[in-house]
Image: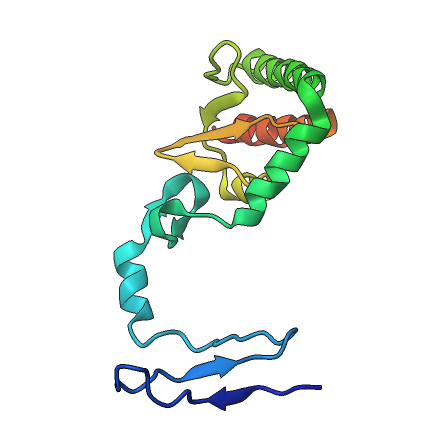
Length: 168
């Protein structure tokens, strides 16, 4: 099996020294786990706090991995328009049930028509962590996506209402 080797091409036709190059055999990857000496300084300049994620974004301009784009494209092509319409109808129905359940217990809830985002008073830390709620300035919000099941909504409503009633 070939191994990595370093070659020097000598001088260029103009007489300038050639740059060194690395020849790497197929199947060999290069990684350097040592961060640059200024990485903490660069991260502090690039990082921006994102309150609803409870973390900082340290990517340049919010850039993301290209694999995500391919995954989304494959999902779009495979699921089709009819599949997405069904997903939206189901999500809107679950959102409506969540809003109705909270309002029935006199919880102040904000949900715009045709929205999957439900805004309500921020509960205790245990509920925030359990359900990974996005919180900011005393409010929390949940987004009812296709992976949010009726069973999950039922558990959340039960836990939230127990907290709501016990907060007095």
